[in-house]
Length: 401
Figure (cartoon, rainbow, N blue to C red):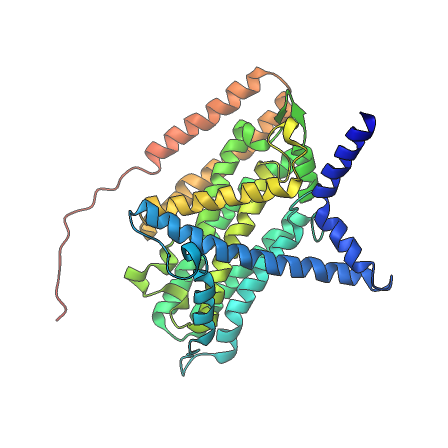
């Protein structure tokens, strides 16, 4: 019995660390001096190969999901069940003509989509995707992540400005204004996690949640401040990634196609890729901060490989993104900005106070009642006062003279 249990534990440990062991086996064929660099290259190649493949799969699932929501058929022509549609789209993007406006700044126009994709890929370097499965385990991993994420705003403005198109520039300015507004709330929503974990290291944040009481995990989302922080984080990341109902920078009915109006071919596909990679990145970070990262939802399921739990949570978040796109209408620009500054930002600031009360009140039911009451009252008051309906007068139409 002891030998059987030992063998079972060995199998579980091997399946959990399969990718770590595979990397070690591959680099073992190289000289010892080359092994660290080779290990990094292998990890980078895995990330660069995995997430674009996940992007291709997600586009099919999204188009089929939206088709079901809208009572129509999604992709069903290319390959079995339409699963090869991303391959056809990729070939089309590669073979389409790359048109650059004559007055455009060629160098900046070329670099903008590359900067966007590279910045998003850099964020994956510090996100733990499983036990011992992180490219760079740095003490300030969360700070590095947000530093890389801020570069995407620069890339978007580069695209709009270099195109020499007023619609592209206006779309870029609106996108940057939206991203900056919600990035403030995004950063503040994660501060409560840092306060509780006492570290900016994402691996230590996961370790702090990888504990169980009566079989239930100590995930931060199961606390009043954690739930409020997660909801504010989800709203802010939806706006940061320009997803519905916050997809105003790409409002076709208003700005042609936004900041990438003057892009075609593979460079346009890079913007498309960057948006989905950003969705994967913020979903993985959200799972790490509030949903225990790679930890299991119940103590009796810890035998399941940790990387399966991480990617299950990530894909669940992607499903929510798709669901929202198929059900919610697009906001107006004034509604979007008012929501950011009059509701989301005050709630995140108040949540910092609630997290402090939770931390220093000690164990007991009193902190649950007090912290929950503060957040619920604030939600009701700000929802009714700060976001009340505006009364607009009747519309009037004039013809250009």
